[in-house]
Amino acid sequence: MTTQAVTDLASPGRSFRGSFKLGDFALRVAAALVLVYLFVPILVIVVFSFNKPKGKFNYTWQGFTWENWLNPFEYPALAKALQLSLNVAAVSTAIALVLGTLVAIALVRQRFRGSKAVDTFLVLPLTSPEVVMGASLLTLFLSMNWPTGYVTIVIAHVAFEISFIAMTVRARIRGFDWTLEDASLDLGASPTRTFLKVTLPLVVPGIVAAAMLSFALSLDDFIITYFVSGSTVTYPLYVNAATKAAVPPQINVLATAILLISLVLLVVGTLYRRKKVRP
Amino acid sequence: MAGTAGSTRQRSRVAPYLMILPALAYLGVFYVVPFFSLLRTSLSTMGGSVYLPQLTFAWDFGNYGQALSDYRDQILRSFGYALTATVLCALLAFPLAYVIAFKAGRYKNLILGLVILPFFVTFLIRTLAWKTILADDGMVVSVLGSVGLLPSEGRLLSTSWGVIGGLTYNWIIFMILPLYVALEKIDPRLLEASRDLYATNRRMFGRVILPLAMPGVLAGSLLVFIPAVGDFINADYLGSTQTTMIGNVIQKQFLVIKDYPVAAAMSFVLMALILVGVLLYTWALGSEDLV
Image (cartoon, rainbow over all chains, first blue to last red; front, side, top):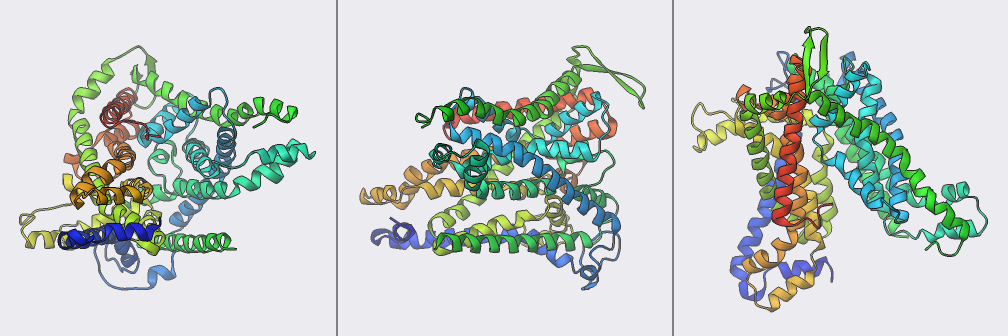
């Protein structure tokens, strides 16, 4: 039974043709409208990256210019903030990836005493509101007299990334044949060699997906970072500060550029996977 | 599974604990301990000067009383806004998720990709874009005004609906995806069976599709409601002083006014309310598919 069958079923059956055809049409229109709705702000962001704003704020359309695209890094503070965010995203993802992947493998490979509890515990950070996570970390840093800055930002990002990574990797590697590890050991490979040559290749696709998610989450995080950043400025923090003082159109340029890069990665990833599936 | 090789078995017994230890230790120090630190702060009294505040632990429950009485409006508003946004998300997400799951055919992956794409733009910039769209001299206001849906001099920016609209937009993806997954899982034979038993379209939808989509709605609602209820960016960018939420209070008390005990108490009020909401919700709808 394939998608085609469902489509056949869901499309007009002989006896209900009239009413259902109309309903079906209305449903498709509604779905299309919602899809358009998702893209309205994106369109505004792209269009306004070509704006030539008069005052300090890039909120109303004034005229077309290539100027912003030709000088994307005109504001050194913006470039610096973006660079810092990329740095934080890379470092925190690398740390969280090790911690999260180990948990995911342990949870999938076998049931052990307390595995259910670990499972539940990992979900908790995903369900706590960001402002509470940020606030609680701030009280910890305050009580320890830790100065907030780069290190505390990385610490906070790792804390919320671990769960996302563990969950993503776990979902991807569920149902694998772990007896392959036993086979490798039986054939005389050392545990380390088995891990590197058997376990790791099995889990790599899941790890890559988790790393991308984690990187994106870190790059986009505002609320938690806001609490633990001190005077350090990441990309979202720069954007927020800009809304209070002056919003340069370069913010839109970089946002559009990031969107385009994501789009390319998405397309390449999809094509690559399709190629792999079809031998 | 590990019944053959003795060495494997021995390794396996300790290995999982060694593997989970680093992450658990990390979350223990930077997730669990901070909560106790927050709890302690919420029960402390503030002394010292403004520049060098001194926190003394004193079982001071007065902070909670103050939080509940001073910020009752924000608490009620946050729940009203987040609840409305969750319902709007479900209503908007359903037709899209349904069409992707049942009618998109070979365009399924393309449309799914398109749905995810807008969320690659930083959350703050997306919200800023809404500021342009909903502006008083913008198109949305003038169109709604000309068809009479908005009174003349009516605004969208700096109103409750502006904030709710922002909350809805920013988290709708967390409703669309679980809903799509739930709909996708529906066995086509069930629809066939309901057809064979002469179900009308409406009945098939109400008796077969909707109940089977409920796990998706449940998961989606929690994924939308929890971040929305604690958010302060939408209220900050798209609202006014009349639309502040709990998040705004916590943020301001912590980072501007620096009244840490009341701010910490507010955080626990937020968590307690979320917990009550989640419990009521799962009690009403069942929780097998929660995690």
